[in-house]
Length: 361
Image 1 (tube, rainbow, N blue to C red):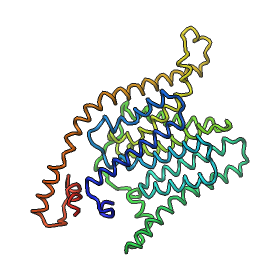
Image 2: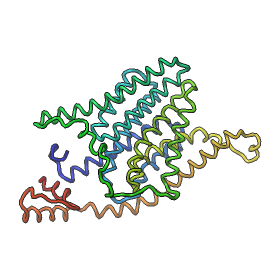
Image 3: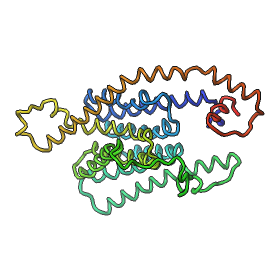
Image 4: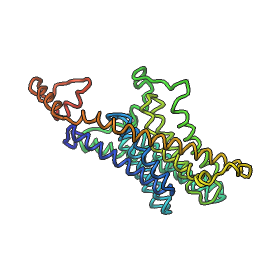
């Protein structure tokens, strides 16, 4: 992409920073559209920024922001449709167009977006009341067709670009590479899932809870919020496969944003109970209220902890990043390379892409 656009490493970082900001903006809007409680909105917004602002001095470009972008846009668009009741044929098609663009951007994320969008509409169809089996099957088949069409459209656009650029048709197998390669990166960069209690376990439980909540309430009329929770859980579970394939701890942040969103959504139902609860009333409370209140209280503790950690660590992390702002040494070293090595000499290793990007080789 840098060669096509004519940019260098600095342009690449600037572009990714803008995309990262767009990811946050989309998730903030999704949170605002779905959650009405101001406290949860504030806590959720601050907690969402924790991995990027406070956990690292730099970005892991293979994950942030390009694997997050269209997940955030899809969740925002879905939240917009739910909040303003814009659920019609046009918005349905727009959702699949967004999934098509997501597939062009990143094949895996695009497929997850398409599946989540289809799941949202199928569950919404079931939530509208008892339907004939033929109607349900027709709905499912229609949205499965939407998933396939969005994928094939993305593949077709890539093949057209190849042809217009003087290349040849590569085929779907090449388009899906390395997804179809069973031996891709075998025994390289291998990090197995922990076989002891780890951070991914409560996250996985939260996502499965979201999916179960949507399925359990499919017969309750007009429960669009449950459909949204279900689709968010499906999309985040799809994204989580990236962590499962290589269970390095920082890869878990691929589903951090939807997890915070789900925490806020699921906690909102019990926020009033927590605010008004008195121990003297515990005997009159229903077990469902107590469970919901306990979940809300746990979610609030998690959100407060994340926000506190973010605010405390952000200052330290900012001072570390100051060391990365000086571009003089980098440009001087690139000039030294240009003066001593022939242009476009083949090279590999750590730092080569960055140096060659500055030299535009």
